Amino acid sequence: MLFWSPSCDSKDNAGQCDNAQFSTPSTAGNLYFYQCAPWGFWDSTAGVAAGSRPAGLPTYAPTWYDTATSSWTNIPLNGVTLYFPSSVTGTALPTESGSSTLSLLGAPNPCPGTGSSFTSGSAVQFPAGVSSATYTYPTTSLVYQRGLTSSQTCSSGGKSYSLVYSNDDITALGECGAPYIEWPGAMPAPQHVNFLAYETGAANNVFYGTDDVDWQGIFYAPNAALTFTGKSADEGSSGAEGIPWLVGQVVVDHVDFHGTSSVQIAYLPCTNSSIECYVGNALQLIE
View 1 (tube, rainbow, N blue to C red):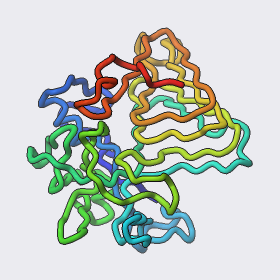
View 2 (cartoon, one colour; view 1 turned 45 degrees about the vertical axis):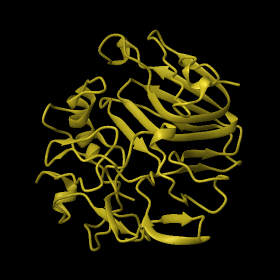
View 3 (spheres, rainbow, N blue to C red; view 1 turned 135 degrees about the vertical axis):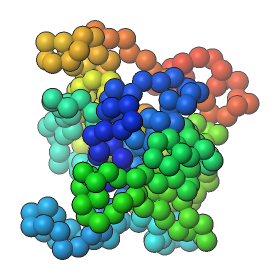
């Protein structure tokens, strides 16, 4: 699978994704979202250069499962799920930023964008996303060289929406009510945030890097460990770097945080009328 999200391109209007800084609400967030959305679409091109497509990899994408009809849809997934069976007991998922600190990855997102602010070639409303927004690939992009000039959209129920610019509001207010899950029985009820990592064994996982690493989705590993480790200055980072981001939900046996930078855990609000949602960051988050 070649995951052609905008983040695969190295340049945007302000430089690299990992150099973009903004606070919300701000128009800078819209510029960042255009270039750095973590979702994408399947490489459906055939007859590509030898060695660029693994043998047997189909040109069609996996699709959502509809819990309302108990059947598979024709709507392609726009993210990935990393599955590790119980036989994996060692180091299952290490990340390494290396010389390039940018690393973005998103679980499938079934919620179409709900915003309306889209400037072609530069900005998409953040975090709402825009269902009609598309990313324009530069001529130097692999995607462009495969014959595509812009990102794909999908049609469902008579409506068309962007696979790349889904709604990124993962609070309760961002739920779209779509009945889609990644596979039958994946979770009791469909929800906005789906599985990024699904691990059943007692393995070790390390998110190593800087705050330029941003993964979105549910990290489900109830029998395993998850360690967040910030990259230190003597390893090539520019001074005190934050630890990698994981935006979504974490279900693990135990979690460790390493490094000298401050660690922030945010508790996303359930509804705007629930008393427990106003008690502060990270409270009622960890059991």
